[in-house]
Image (cartoon, rainbow over all chains, first blue to last red; front, side):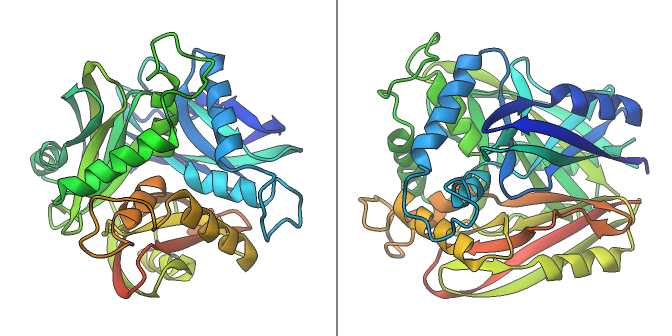
Length: 138
Length: 138
Length: 138
């Protein structure tokens, strides 16, 4: 059974959402798999994955502000060795996703019209993030 | 390797949770796959998927009220082109799931006794929602 | 196509996070699958799965305290047949994950350095929890 595993590296420049749909679609094309699934996995505990509205940047700004309020950096955390964005990063990661699975049909990811795949960076500093894409199918 | 992909259309009548376990189980039966996984994917950014208690409607009402409080429609959002349920829909979707993967053994989804699969509609208006089910296995 | 399905039973002793990475890794080894995915599924509506920082217990304590505040037991829930941890368990489960999918390459789960797989128990009483691990690949 065909399986293709590819490692992506995504550069982030502080907190925010970074679209990776094109990078994942490229792996799916390369796999030549017609029907199956693409699993996307973030190998980190201070960033995460989301499916999000990909047209209106204002929608993403609302989302980012919501998470700032829901998991505020100025609350009292026990684990703050790496700064005010330490425990908050882990909590925001847990509230979103480490893995996302997208169906493939006719050789294409079956995302809806407004769906994009995003890396959600929870750290203030710049990072190189490792994402694994696994395509399984026929 | 056997892969079966099926598109479901689910009608929703405003905000709330709609059970789709039977529709997914029907696809699993049709696939004749004995061991593997069923991936369920919602092709939208204003509804989502959850696994939830399927016996007590009161538990689902508590859940729905919790999300009304956690992501209130009367807060100040930048993205409200389509109304007060615009950004809130996206945020509630991100806090829940777009994809869910259920194991299959002996030809049956291995859901626990009280687990049902639900579409969580975050929009006030009626919609026809597109769900993709991908069954992979042997 | 090789598929291995294994049932794990995990004992919990009240609310908290319980690491299950080693148990899942053992199933992956046993499968002899070199490339593919491991799907982990919790067959319950009052516990869930998370990927979490596996080195600093303080980070997990912050996470657990966050969920106590976000979904407080002393709020007014309609569904409380089984006590104050009844609806809160379901809501905390919905905010985290029932399924998690981890890529496998070279016969190993591709977890990041600090990532562990945890069962998140939302009930006060002790439980025997059923987890299904499905390894698919080549």
